[in-house]
Each structure stands twice: as structure tokens, then as C-alpha cells.
Length: 480
Image (tube, rainbow, N blue to C red; front, side):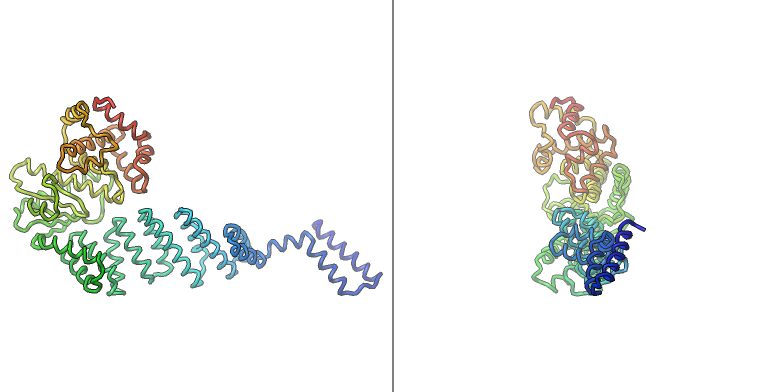
């Protein structure tokens, strides 16, 4: 017998004796016994363990704007009564309130963990599940705002296990997949939306855009024309339609060949050897760039080969531009009679394919100097003579500092841009040779997580950017 029970039992015996001696009424005695029981330690313990009382306290705390305290109390209530439906619903509400608070603090990952707690309760209440799906969508929006499309897609996929038919969630998932460069998955999602809702113009436009990116021009036009007819006031769709129509007018007679890794469109009147040279060069780049950066995309990359004049007129590019990647690899090609011309084509395609891989690995979040430096490094354009060029630039004061390198690369047509390309190549080459080519992939992984390049370099190479620049220049025999 515990001490408190002993005291209570003996107290009760004493009260009964008093009742007999003084002939006290039973109602008064019952009141005395109740007060004694309430103020006993046993009653306090029982009250703390009462799930009903704990549940009511949790609800009160929620009403007072104290969700963290409410979670603690309601979790205790659920531990005492795991089958209690009201307790579980109230705990779910507290978890979601914590998710909202955490999201407002800018912590999408923490908010997702709170939302997952709701899911793990196994509640089948329609109202709770609807709120949970809405909470997941808000978290996904926060990830999208931070350009963390992979986590956004994962969150939305979870939300769709709760509400599979929610068209808003499905559209948002399709957009997240598209921005995460998972175009084929995004296309399947938008086509699924159109199957259920053929008049969904957003899904139509996105199907058109994705098909355009994949080099399927005729199908893209069909989808975009349908979407524009359904909603002629949708300026985004109309603008995209005009762009695709302009390109298709040039490319409609191009032959389209589909290979394992590439879809290649080429002028139908071109020499057949051009197509052979192009695909050989692309497959070579797929292997060499893939080995260096440890990445081999599953999706087919669209490649368009133009006669030189068409390339510059259609895309409005400077005559010195030898190729671009804007979602497709686009390259002008003339005669390939000489080995020098074929070698130039191989280098240009390797350069542009490297841009593809950097885009996929960083979600287009790479400083221009690093992006172009990797592309030049992978194209193997430069030979040992670049030392003299850079040394001369340092001597005459034209050497471009690292913090100005990206802007210098945009100065098309000037002597400065050629020097900037050479410097970018030289710096990336120094990084690959000094720290290992695998370090480039690790830096790109940091950039995918939206980390600043300075932090990416520090965490990967264990050196500050200014020190990296000094070490690189010293390797060239240049005093910084």
C-alpha cells in the first residue's frame, strides 16, 4: 500500500467513527470524503493521466495560440487513449498549426516533418485530410519559391496520395517536375490532367512547351494551337505559339532522327555525312562529359543542326556564336570536307552538351564563368599556348578579375569576351587538375541546393574564393 492510500484509508476510517459518534448526516460526510479525495496525491495523478482532461487542455492551449504546448499535452492524451478519435483530430490540428508556424519562419523542411506527423496518425476524417493536403501544397509552394523543385515534387506526390483527384495539386506537381528537368514525367502528368479535363489550357500549354523542348515540333504546335483557340487571351500561350510557328517554318522540312540519348533535327538537304558526324560527336560527348561529371541523363536531348545563315537569322545571334543551348542544342554547320571542320563541330557539340549537363545538375543555377569554363574544359578547345595569352593580358592590364568574369562573358563581339572564355577554361582546368575533376560535380551539387558559389567552393575545395583565385594566378606565373 502506498503512503497516500494508507493516509486516505485511515482518514476515511476516522470520518466514519466521527459520523457514528456525532451522528453526522451522510450528505455532509460524502462532501468531506470528496474533498479529501480531490486533494489527495492519488487524485492529482489520476487527473494528469485522464485523456479527456488532457484533450480539453490541449484544445484550450490551441485556442490561446500555443500550438507547441498543445502538441505536448495532446500527445500525452493520445498515449493514454490511442483509439480516441477526437484526440487524434485535435492533435492533427496542433501538428498543422505547428507546420504553418514553421513555414512562416522559412523552414519548409521542418514544416514538412510536422505535416508528416499528421499523415502518420492514420486519420480518415475528410476535413482533416483536406486541410493536410492544403498544408502540403503550401509547403511545396515554399520549396518552389526557393527553386528546390525536387523537394516540391516529392511533397506534392505525398499530397496526391491524400487527394488523388485534386487538379491543383496535379498541375503544381507537373510544374515542379518540369522545372526539375524531369520533362518526360511532367509530360505524363499534364497528359493525365488533359485526359480528365480536355479543356485545361494550362495542361495543354505545358504539353506543347515540353514537346517543343523535346524537339517534337509538330505535336507541340497541335497542342499550342488548341490551347490558344480555347483561351485566346492567354498571352503566355500565344507568345509561345508564335515562337514555335516561326521556328517550325524553318525546320518543318528537317529530317528528325531519334537515337537513344538524342533527337536530332537536321536540314533535309544536308549531306548525309553531316548527320553521321553529329551523332558520333554527341555520343562521344555523352560519354566523356558524363564520366567527368558523373551524370548520364535518361531523357533525350533535342539537337537542331542549321545551315549557318538560318541559325544566325532565326535566333538573332552574333555571327561569332558557334552554338547555343536554350533547352535544345542548336548549332550551325557548313561543309565538313576538311578534318579541321569536323573537329570544330565535335568541340562545339561537346561544349553545348556540357551546358546541358550543368543545367540538369544545377537547375540552371550556375555562375556563367563556371558554366562556360566547364564547357570549354570539356570541349578540349585550348592547348598549352593559353599560358602566354593570359600572361600577356596580366602584363598589359587587361586580365579580367574573377568577380568580373561572368559579366565579361556577355560582352559578345569584343576582345574581352575571348579572354574571359580563356580565363574561365583556365580556372576550371586548374580546379580539375589540383582538386580532381570529381570536385566539379561536388560544386555543382552544392549549387543545385541553391548554395552560393563561394560556399560551394569552400565546402568542396576547403579554400576561400579569393585564395583560389590567387593560387590559380600563381599557377600561371601571374602575381595577384
